[in-house]
Length: 146
Image 1 (tube, rainbow, N blue to C red):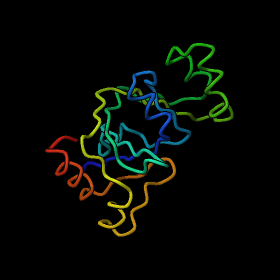
Image 2: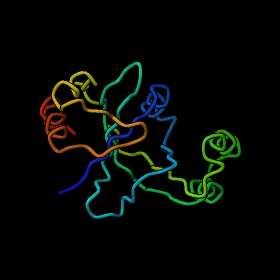
Image 3: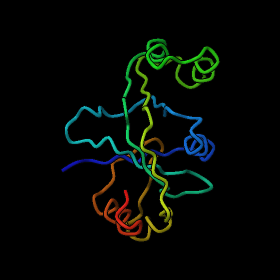
């Protein structure tokens, strides 16, 4: 069975993703998407104060290397590298997820709804795998769109 990942992203960065200003999502740790059981479709959990699953995207390309190599691979500007260095500079293993096929759901699913229906659900600080029943709920309340 295919595994789906939920990424916790701060509202400021979610807005940048929606506007198209942010085309990469960076992580210090992330599973290998080449694993045949992990989907390239990533679900977006917008953290406080929104606290809801608001959409999804496809990972067009998953870059994984040390910080300097990663910035070179994604053709980052010096300004962008400097901004990201505060978050990733000391990491020998960094991940950049290239965002494509963004879908923002008509009906978001709040953390309260998730906790009520799925026994104390927690979105995780960085990412977590989603239970198939949650994927089914997303699909049902958004007319089959995931």
